[in-house]
Image (tube, rainbow, N blue to C red):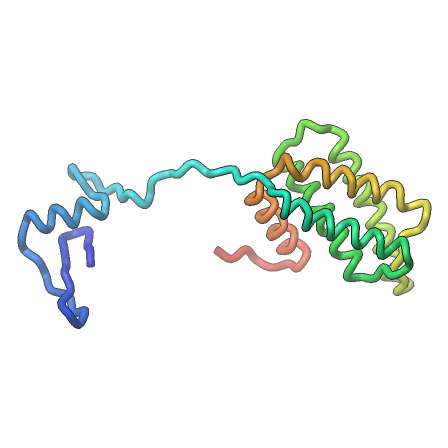
Length: 178
């Protein structure tokens, strides 16, 4: 076991045994990153974050959630679960694009139009318990799906995951757990 104030070895059963050998203490202290009188630990270094691009598989999952829900609406099998998947996928991509400060100015506008339409669909669904996307609402939602699918490749996995978690917390009213 290592200690900032010296080295502590353990015997066969795990009981701490102080070590007084200066050379051994120096080696152990160097292993935990304390050297030349500084108190800086190696584990505390700032690491560059890696940008892991969205893979084809993740893009397909988002596309499937959106297109399957849309198809369910077109054949009259739309329900609150399908609506939730569609709305969540579009909302996560839209919010992530905003955080990423996308250069495609049409992306956020198109996704906002789709979200506005989905909000109208939700209001009707909540009031009547009939979940459907009317013929007049379909073009804006389909445009939003296509735009989300086209833009998701410009994002990274961590941004999508953090955005989804934040939106879920916002919707559920949960506090962030660290």
